Image 1 (cartoon, rainbow, N blue to C red):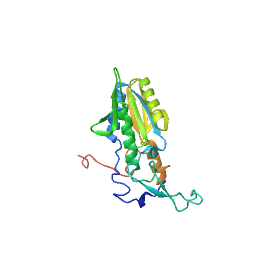
Image 2 (cartoon, helix red, strand yellow):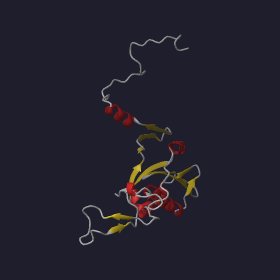
Image 3 (cartoon, helix red, strand yellow):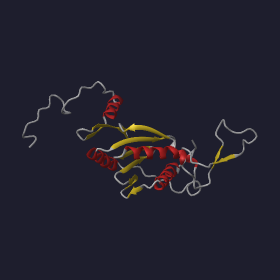
Image 4 (tube, rainbow, N blue to C red):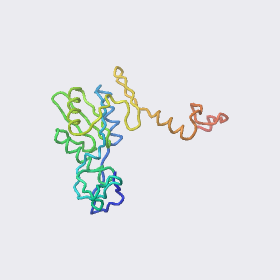
Length: 218
């Protein structure tokens, strides 16, 4: 971890923005998964920002407690990105985008964190949200092959069939072609934060003494 707040614009970094997949894109892909009965897998990149390559020449003080004896006054030149750098998210995205392009994937024009590739009789869609990935496709062997290639390039964690994304739980019934999103855990955490975990649920959020007539609600 570096002290990115000490970086100077134009010297230590130029561009720092990095895209993340849009929620509308996630919903659209999930609807395709449900309607076409696709496989839906999830992966996680370990220490994603450490994979980024730096364009700028950046120096940092030696980390406290790790300075080399006799070289206390020397500084370190960074060869790779570190957490804390302002450009770290962008450099990670650029590295990942380059890898996906090399593997034959294209970016969606409407969302630069949506990648897709067509095969003879199938296709794969990959969604990227910083270090979380959703992979959808009809051919599980092609998905496994993509996982293998990703693992060779990055330090990955295969989480198997997707059960959760961005705090939303995914419930799926393949036989009925139904895929549901739920934020029950998030709602429970909010209730606990405001000490309302034991509150009784009601169908209408009004006090019991309220009486509304038809004239009041034409």
